[in-house]
Amino acid sequence: MADLDTVRELASQEHWLAVLVTTKRNGEPGVSLVNAGVLPHPVTGEPVVAFVARGCTAKLTNLRANPRATLVFRAGWEWVGVTGPVELAGPDDQLPGTDLPGLLRDVYHAAGGRHSDLAAYDREMVADRRTAVLLRPVKFSSNPPGTDHEEHA
Image (cartoon, rainbow, N blue to C red; front, side, top):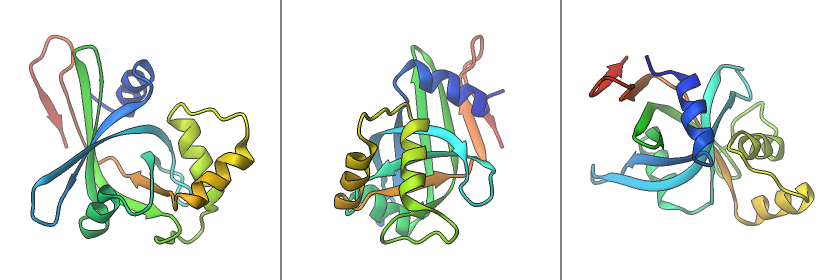
């Protein structure tokens, strides 16, 4: 059965890259590639799958209009999708109880990122109006070895 351990396993094999699927205002899917990782929610402590988005992007516009997404991770022919509601934490999306610079660093590190100058990283995050996107896993989809397709609610 797919779960967050499956996400960690596959993501770590492919540089933490995931395909993000959002819903546009017209109902069509919006798709992009992001680096995402698993970490505790900064307020509740429950596990979330998170990534950092640049401000003023279509993905943020889509998520503000419909705060639900799917992230798909793969390694070879194995894949896992995780779907759920999202919360945004950024300069335009306040999430009470969060330290935004610390959260952006935590998400970056969870997604495999390393930076030799974290002060420079922080300045870049501010300049780009970066936002943390926190997805609460509700549903997993996968193709574990020996099966064609499974969905778990």
